[in-house]
Amino acid sequence: MKSLYFCTGIVVSIILARLNPNIGAPGGLLKPELTVKYLAVSMIFLNGGLNIPTETLTAAVKRWDIHLFVQVFAFVVFPVIVYTLVTLLKYTFLHPALLDGLLILSAMPPPVSSAIILTRLVGGNEAAALFNSVFGSMLGIFLTPPLILFILGSKEVEIPSEQILKQLILTVVVPLICGLVFRNYKRRWLLKQNIPFNLIGHLLTFYIIYATFCATFTRSDLSLDYFSLITTGFIIFCLQSGIMCLLLFLTSSSVFNFDCLDCVTIAFSGTHKSITLGMPVIEIIFEGNPNISYLSVPLLIYNPMQIVLGGMSIELLERWLNSHRNSRRTSARNSYWYYEKNYYFIVKYLIFKKIF
Image (cartoon, rainbow, N blue to C red):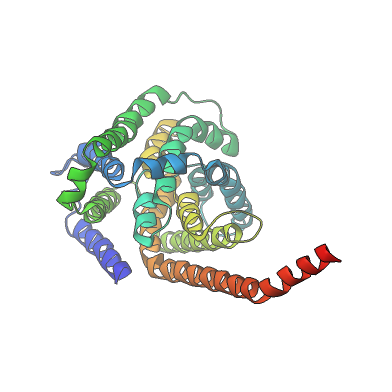
């Protein structure tokens, strides 16, 4: 039911964007360059600060194993996987600049909103998703541009890191801290108000999706034939779903000491990519490049698809979580039964050994 509601909201947002994209496009009536870039993103992190107990977030910050796994996967493993894929796709009909766009996409940091919302919907470790969004975005300012230049073998380009860092502090760090501080001082008052934090988060996500698609539908420089566009979309869909399954398989194995809630968080935070940092970086690095539209297409497809695919996977991940919880309870009951059954014989053996 939850996944149906969220997917319906996504579909409605896309349809509204298609009907009249100029309303939600940059410079349009809704001014998304202000209302999305600053207001909506700030509200998501303020909402998270008000909703998540401080002790929960503090405990999540200490989970260095999750954060290290997510960031290494996002900035090292993910680019290696995509580079391998692009090496194979070079022998296809796809435009070389489109393949470079996939490589650029792989260097992007985790996003500042979608992974948090989807983790909350499924019931994963939301605090860890929140921290990785903040930490990953900060790392992305300094790692993403040089990583793109390294992958493509380009020359150094000056990136306005200071400007982007100020924006992230203003829209991410400050609202989050304000929410946490307010919750600490007014916790009882907040609990009495019954504020629908989840609903607020969903509406903000729908608005971001709407504005993203409005911007996509109004772009006149996307000179890409439909067959290449559909093929790129299919490749990205397979890439996302494949990596999500890979992450769930790896993190739930005995190799890593993650519980099922952590696995869900890693699956979203490790696969999602930020368009907030991505598009400005592409426009700055490749300004004047005649193939800039091709370079931006993979990110423009990947960003909304990660939310659509995430919405489609909510029910499946909830079932997966429940099955793991049930199997853990069964295992605990069996262990307890085994201990009780053999307790008498263990005590008898120890007494016998002590006496004789």
